[in-house]
Length: 229
Picture 1 (cartoon, rainbow, N blue to C red):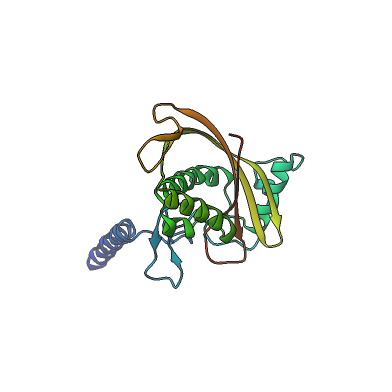
Picture 2: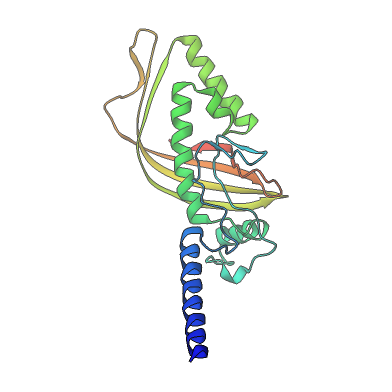
């Protein structure tokens, strides 16, 4: 009889232990190798536990894996763009074309706003030295003439990758942006000398971004701009 009660006590204790384990898993979660946390792309931030500042990011990518299965990439190697994306993915398996194109729209807006307002500090963290020099010269010319640029991004209709390649260890991605903007340039007396503050215009831009795939720095840098307008 005593043995039966002892066996019953063991069952009760095992049930309680199992219940506690389930509760702990719900509270603490289970580690599966992907618990690094989500970080928004194109967002100014600094990780207090990292030696690398992530200010003025253009795009953030997770750490690279050791290899990549090309069969898992949803692009065609027979297409020049697809072949280029495969090259980038081989160098950096975490590269996500759709996510990059979406995040690039945020960078597009940030850079347009910074250029219109003459925010050199923001631009410097997003542009290559050559591109920054061109932007800085344009801002300086406006300031010297007492001119003011009013540029409003109404919306971005689309952003798509039109070129992708590897230049050594650097991935190079060109995107085509089709957007609606309102732009006007005023002189020192507030007269409109270019554009129309009441007209929405269609603008097509081609922006090229680059990143060193060997670097732990997740930043992408704007290295070239071209416009059809």
